[in-house]
Image 1 (cartoon, rainbow, N blue to C red):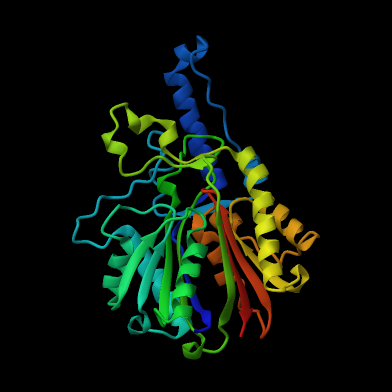
Image 2 (cartoon, one colour):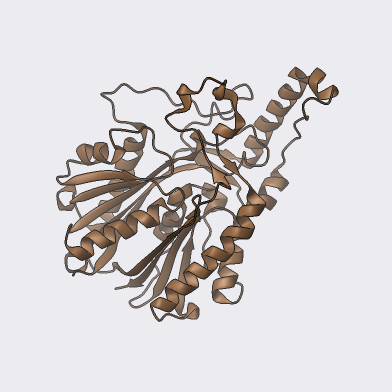
Length: 373
């Protein structure tokens, strides 16, 4: 049995950003167009009018101030309201593979590794650009990695579940080093025409190197243990899968084919599950919550993270104990907790403890307890 560690991480951040102010202008223009086009039906009571959004509403509901996206032109066009991502030919790298190469290169450099040192690539993300061939195999090929690769999806917990799979394979000796990659183009499945959620998501890609402790550089993070949980729920759902075009019922404009969330129900149901999961995981390792230096949580909503942090620690966390990045990145699904880890872990000293935790659709919860070596 080998000790698995996280020896490197990397983040690809798209160049384009959309501020709340820009988003509100576009959404309100769309709402006005919709209300004008459907004025008769709205007057007759057959359709509800669309209300305006506001910057204050977005910040109050989420804590988000901006988001990075792969294309802002289509999103900010009131007559389009979705990203315009060009169709690539089959002999070009896919957009997710392109994002992954950047994040992987940074993670490999951080770990002092080359592609020749990697045995397995896992692409773990909430939405993949195609059913097959696996995006992970494309990334493997572009990096020139021997071995094997596969995709996996556990929605917003994909990264932590991927880390558990990688750690288990390293621990068992199946691999010496694994790349876990999380390309998230959340803008492609968000319904930008829905006031209640049009501000939630952004795009990004993260990567981590999981390897044996005896081959890792100094300053790595020992993976003391991992813990995963799933419990089926429809309260967060996206039906826009590969069967979409086989539907005969005007599916292109159906609201229920994009990201859907019963936010209040999710808040009430998920947060107790996550808080208990984290406390149970720490207890299994004989760790008291006050021994943690940091919690790197899924970046879904500031209020959710504040609730979880308070439940786990028994007090309001200090900002450095529970760093948020969603004000700059918005919700980036599985990548959020890894962004927080990558950007807020350099100050750890030998023996310091931390926990990565993600949660989301499924419901799913994944946690990784780390110790600085």
